[in-house]
Length: 384
Image (cartoon, rainbow, N blue to C red):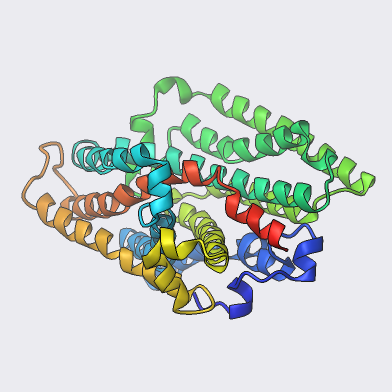
């Protein structure tokens, strides 16, 4: 990851004890909030490759997708298993979760061959929910830090939480609903409106989603103003929410959603890696890791910062590469009858999405449980 030791090593500072930042101001801004500057980069690179370098649109799109997947999206996906599959404590706590995960690759492979559009539709909406779930998790981390350190009840009241959740869960959907209502909701070369019920391809759907978001946004603004005037506003959380809502609202308006989503994925993945490695380092510091996850502990010890854990996550990507090669070869032999044109692009898409989504959906599945776990963070507050 190339981050400094000071930025990733769990170390209690005066600032982290007394402030509302999760770790400290610099860490939060670099990895959580101001890393929002990464969001437009994948789309800008795609435009440069296509319009300035004259590279084919599909080639440009797939090149950006592949780079993001290898550099950050893939390691973020695989880093989940450092806390789940490679952790005995997690396996003992959720044995059925681990066993049932095998169902996911079976579903992915079946849909990839039989109905790639349906696979991508399920992926897009589950990915959106996963991103929103991570946002709520980060917001709850800020709430837990505030409650643990300052005991300020009003800013983390049930109503305040409801307003925060409301603006988070609705910000992605107005522009997406508009595209669906116009029958132009495309992911790469796949038109998802082919499998979205016709009832949603109406103007009322866009109006409803916009109205719900508008109500949530107005409530959030009023809440933030009241907190500011009352002197108890949580600035780190409010900054994070404002940036998140702005990006998530505008991103679906871009014409190439496949690449546009990679921008949000880059920001999301950096946040996830930072939080995952921080939690692992906390457990390592408090001597919880050697017994429950010895392999992860060994890689954690390789460096004081997170480079060892990042390297392990990258190595785990080898599983996706093997799946990609196998599926790409199989698509040359077992080709569905309904695929009659653009065979090369279809083969790449099937192999790419199978290799990625088999692990990505398990990552989503496991994170629904990890995003309810605050134990390591609470321990760090108690030790400070």
